[in-house]
Image 1 (spheres, rainbow, N blue to C red):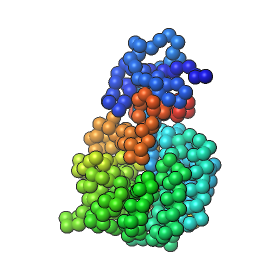
Image 2: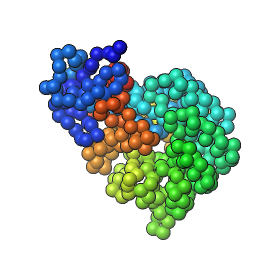
Image 3: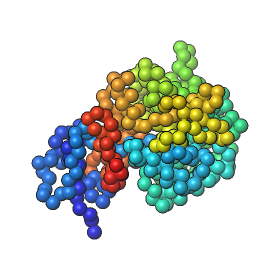
Image 4: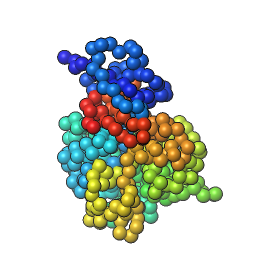
Length: 384
């Protein structure tokens, strides 16, 4: 038996067709039924009225290494995914792709098993899995452990192809130096989102990888070959090749605002630039340090670093990222919010999340007039 029809009113509504005024979002049984004028609401509709601001879709974060005080690498278990997803939902990311940073084959197998079990259990917010490594370039390792980076072998490819049949979404970050284009093609043909990252690859190598089926670049500008006058590098490929989309860490630490603004203006479609948090264990918690592969990572403000000062993920909420994009790069806030919701959802082929429209999941954020996250609904259930 269906539950009662519920409405949220009192704020502007961000829909795929733009912002609408004096409208209500109707939802029932965890799904959005309609966005209608407030004047059309019947007397039997249960109504929640918020205080101004606007209603936006829940964020979709494709790069989440940890949260709630936990790292997936340190405890690749279902309970870790449950804690991570809940922590991120409270700060607006109602759908996440838990991300395993380069680790041993055993830890990777455990993370894959945990993600499969989490999907089977229906843990809210868990979309699948993102494996960031280990098939990367040591020269662009960033915070990844160089001792664990290695080329892709046939057994690795077979494991990924099997995993792709068991998860709704599987994203794999690789460097062209660590995989062959034939391996990229096999992954892409299996429905895996292949992303290029932690690489010193040339423009031509990235173009060849894109032709083989790669469709994404991981954390644009960071841990990759930069654009030069005679060699555009990975950054140049990400911006010039329409087949590629690119995640961006917009915390004003990883990438200078001027570089962000330039990239947004230069990006060729249909690929897009979308926002990721690259969040670590500190997200949704008050911890100041944690470990990764036996190395301690410290938080200073919003900056996370290894002992040698290397950036190690981010302490970033996607609402802050969207506001940074808007304020520092001149992008309209509505567009910036779509960079954290609809655009990444479209990239992974999940058209039932990241938008406020009929049939979509009732994942809704109330962002108040002061720009603060006031309330979160996930699957129609109010979390805050």
